[in-house]
Length: 628
Image (tube, rainbow, N blue to C red; front, side, top):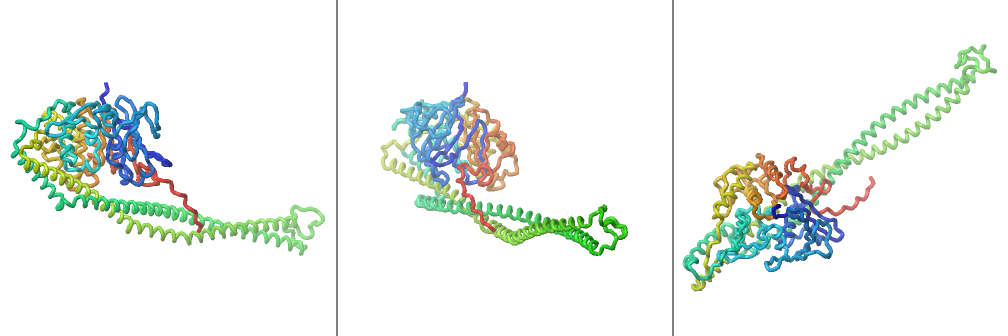
């Protein structure tokens, strides 16, 4: 019997008077790689949106005019279905089968709410959970053992890892919101063990299970101290974080516009340089051809002149023979006394003279045509002599502008944009910590001002069994060892940080690049563990930029560019069976053996080479010819 789970098959955007924007996926390993700003990360966001994500899609310029999104998926048993949703969000339409055009109303369709509810299965979350074998599960909400119905959104962050999330210092089980940590960890335990928290008994407000008021205050003070220390590291003025975030969002928007405009200028100049080089090469070849033809025509003209001179000599000799008369025959050599002018001889002088004159006229006509042709070629050569220096000068100007102005400006804008994006991530993290501090302070104030109120009591939020934690660590060890990750053969799961300790060092304490790779190992390890132990899992994972260290090492420790980790990384994932689907989004080009695969898509970012990006480029008008 096949394990419950899903495979993603096809994602497409549709709109009136718009070419569909689509990408397909298959079982096993799928890779989308290529240039920045081509829609790769947007695909990840769109898939998350189509799996019930509430966050509105980014308003990227390329998706203007598209109003419908379709996502085709299938169960591991091959049952296919198509989900349709407006780009503005809201409910879903589900229709069985594989459909790549917008769905109209039809009998048999199911309308699924975008809000999870345990009271009705007619919502996207419950539909997906049922396909994954997780319907009806419950997870702990807080330390009082209050439970909630499991939502697919609890699971989504463990299988869809964005570019921002994959490099975070915190545990993959945390999302920056401390109030959600308990539910996140409970979901992780559910996937590893297969057992949910339905049997938990909610702790009552009063009883021996709870800490004393003084102990609660002491614990809250410890939490406050830790969070305030972290907040101080992130921001000197936490009260200004909201305003700072707004300014950063505005600056990012402006920077993106400038970056988009500069990239457009860069592409236009690159295209112009290519066209000028082509014109220069073709013009130079034609000019050389003209010069060679003129040399040949000059030689031919000299032959014509020589032939005319010879024929004129024949004509002149024949004419003199007719006038003088008393000379030997120029044709047969007969002396005047032996010439028989009333009879025929072997040659007819008059006929020869006439033929010579005819031939002279014919050669003069050919010479005239040759001269006209040579003059035309000479004029064309002069035109090239005039234009080629101008083309060379313009080519030099365009190349100089690319090298001195546009290229450095584009690099500067990209660096500035990346810096702003990193700063925005830091501000968001600081803002989350600041709000947590405010919540803890409010909680402490409530307990301190109302000593009889037991609602502030804290209880355990559950632990992962040592055996399962050890087995999961061994699975991650197996993954990292297969990738030849340094120290990957010594991994254990730390219950306190709820993260991995690799070769004696906390995963979150490593550089950004290694955090990305080890986060990927955590996610892949979870998928493989669930498959090997037949515990429920959606059956797919999506990783955005897991090989970050190859392009941006933070330190020598972070630099794995001289290793074969990337090849081993892809080789390991390429061994995926039909019941495991891995989708990798990357900027760097995978090894050739991977790019030759069927489930690999490259976005060139060049309108003249291959596929530009996820969204098709609008057609460009034909240039108007300009005469020289």
